[in-house]
Image (cartoon, rainbow, N blue to C red; front, side, top):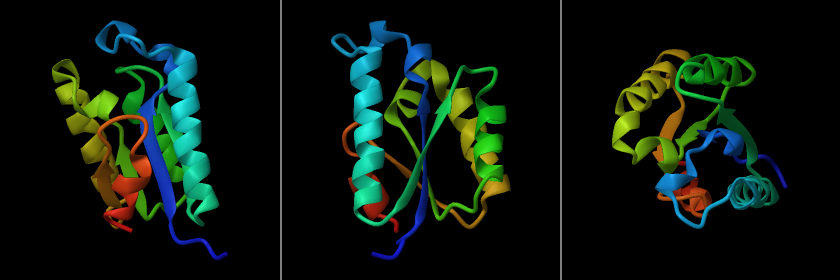
Length: 124
C-alpha cells in the first residue's frame, strides 16, 4: 500500500495533562488512544506521527521541531488543546506556527482522542 499522506497529530503529552478537566481519563488511557489513532492511520496507509507538546511555554517550540522534521500534508490539533478556554492563546499560537512553517498542510481538528482518523479523512 502506498502512503496516502504524511500526518502530524498534535496533542498534549499524556504526562503533562491536567486530568481534572476530563474525569475518568488517565495518562495510560490517553496514551493508548493517541497511539491507537496513529496506528490505525498507519495501517490505512497514512504516514502518521504523534507530535506531543509538553506544556504551554514549550508548545510552539515543540511544534516547530516536529514540523521541521517532515513536510506534512495534514496537521491535526487535538481537542484537549482546542476546546479548553484557557488554551485559546496557545491554540492561536499553534495555528500560526503551522501556517508559517507548513503553509501547504491542511489543518483539521478532532473532538477527542478517538476520532482523529475521521478528522484527517475530511481533508486528505
